[in-house]
Length: 326
Image (tube, rainbow, N blue to C red; front, side, top):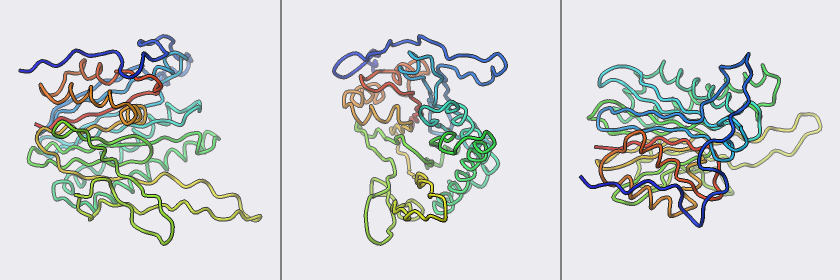
């Protein structure tokens, strides 16, 4: 078996400013210990033809300042046997808000609850390639879950913008005959695929345009148009009225992609803290290509080490889920 190259501490022009290991712990309230967030969460599984590795790590900046990890990660299996459905949910709370870590964790729990209650129907739709039904159904579940966050913000007496989170999810059927992988969510982050030694950025995007409303589109055009396109939000604001409160900023668009995995593929879903350095530092992409292209899926410890390769100028939390296809 080919030997993987050794892990490295950082790539790029030089070492990052912060220490490589955790320094300060976040402050703890003895009456709210359930509010504590671990520095690192690591998980993994193998179902059907796919092997999953997932991690969420506190960023260098938060480690230095003694702030809690704003990213949350949840992995769950609903159902049993080949009918099972695996969910990976990750969220990032709003920057510089006291309850960011709570909002992220709550977003993951709400979407997991919604998916879990509908997992039989979702698994059937995935196997039958009903992309339109999948997209509309997951859109509703996502809206309801984020609506719970807005309700929670109202209960706490804070603005919705102060208690919100990006939310990004991956659905993996356990059926070995089904290679459909479904991504959905809202907010910043990345969806990448390592195929034949090259990274592809397959994050569904909303195009910027003016004029008549049009239909948005995902990145690579080889996908079928049914159910894999999004309606654009043109961002046209309504002039303020002296009789009505100013309109709230538009919500981030819902993003959806259902793609067919090939043997040898590696699919990577991540929050912005991982997506930004992967897009901005070619050496990081090259390093992960070398690490993940040969020798099969890494173990949990090796995946954690790979996810923590540091890049100067990028110090946010990192949350990533990678799926290796046999």
